[in-house]
Image (tube, rainbow, N blue to C red; front, side):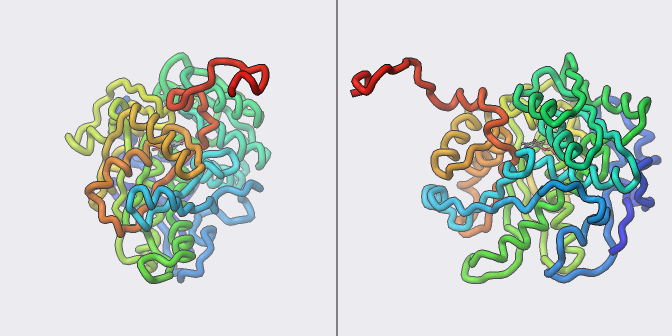
Length: 401
Ligand SMILES: *Cc1c(COP(=O)(O)O)cnc(C)c1O
């Protein structure tokens, strides 16, 4: 297999080198506080049949992979939920079982390998929390130094997690967007590799692995009477910067290019009503920089950095973006846990809330996958809003009889 970069706007091709992050032509017109212009995609050239290994379709050779078991996350058949909702082919792809408990490990894994290949030992990034704790953990496995810029609002567990893995952490007195800008300035001064989402093309490329896995994993189930490798009909994806969204599309597009699937699934991106930049752009065609806030910290983003690339694909492949409220997230997060035994963080619950909201207009026979992207223990403080914690202490069995 051969690989090169291709600009997602002008389609110009480039060699894959770490110095190049955005298309030099298209990024010239970049305005501040707008989604990135000239996001580069990896393009593959070659053939593969359905026995491919995921690593065959990645642009960095396995000898550089970090020694951390990223990916191959479980695909759940939520029987109670299927019964309750009437969707008999509903699946949950649980990415909270990655080594650092979030989907972000897919991107960190490939960025780490890419840096290793070019003997780069310093990786820096901005993060709402998970990308940082992920890069810190994967970097620790690979022996790379990680410098992280976090907004002050990041949940404590994610900060502690990154520090536990030995990363250098700076807390930014402002939003994720401010952290993003500072981290870019840091990389420009200090060198090393920047892992910022969408800015580093390996983030999107790493995230595509979820689609490749789904294709193979779905082949292990008998669905509507047949058993074969296949793509889902519909995938629910939580959206912040739109990089998971872009990666999910990229994986299916690779499969289509290789002739392994016929069509691209319908991807439904889920945002929150109070952090809905991509949803607004989907509706109005314009990206406005409006300050956001939501309980789902992982998708709290003013300017979706991969917004243009994500939106272009949504339009081209007839996907959509929808919103849910924080209250819906809190409620469905608890109900998801109670019916499945899965505890996800608010962003993961957002995808599930999106599915419940869209359910009336979906075909109950459709093959549907909901991506739960992060572990609930990363933000247990917000979970306590959806449950009631006992207020009194007992001293003996008599107190409760
Ligand atoms: C980062 C993240 C998302 C959103 O991914 P984007 O690529 O920013 O759209 C969703 N869920 C979790 C748990 C995340 O950490």
